[in-house]
Length: 295
Image (cartoon, rainbow, N blue to C red; front, side, top):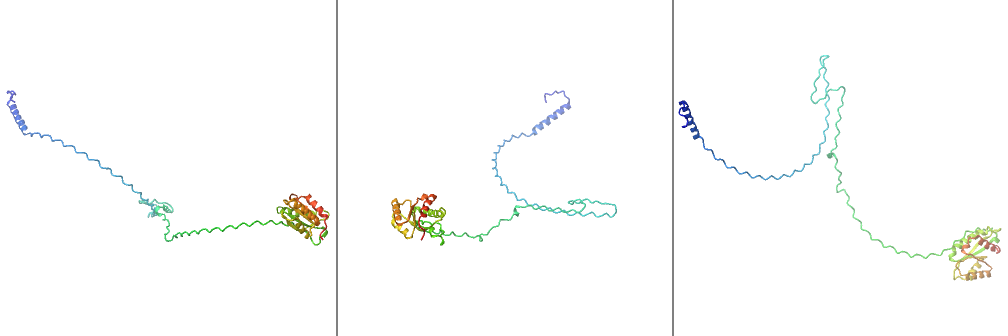
């Protein structure tokens, strides 16, 4: 302020001096500036919380069966107005239906939907009523099989008899010839067939039928005595001896032929393959026609 010019008026000088005093007073009264506070250290970051496990979803509750709808109440018809020709329409109340002409049938209640709880539980059988399984019976030991019986030796086949000869009491004796047959065991069937075939042929071949009466049928073997066999035929008064002896020794056949010749008996030997031949039957019957008849 001392440098300012001294030639300024006194009023300006007074103002300036007043301002100096005010400024000096303000500078002394201003408090000293507070030092800056130290910065606080940053807080440590909190660790993240562990995620909670998700809760198990609750099972859905069974849906409740829908309740049957209540039938609406019948609408009351409006009362007639007291004055003729004047109609009064009432506003429908909340929850009511507008009037309908004619009778209205109430709607049928909705069918009750089946629910799982309505199903009947399965019928349980009490344990007391169930029968206990019977104890298995002990298996009986198998009985020993009976010893097989020894097979019986087969019986020798008996020669079947030829067809019954139709010889009656009225048959002429001179037409009957008494015949004896001899055979081996292998020729039993052939002998039967020969006797039947020869008996039938004797009644048709000749003009006067012959009837053959079988008086003996003897089985012979290699040990048989031709003379003894011929003696048996002679005892039954046989006029002829017919032999079907395939396999019999030839010496035996010759001895039989000689023995029959001495006894006056006709002897013929026939092979098994010739017993059904007509030529064989004719030769034998022609020889028998020369023999005497039954006495």
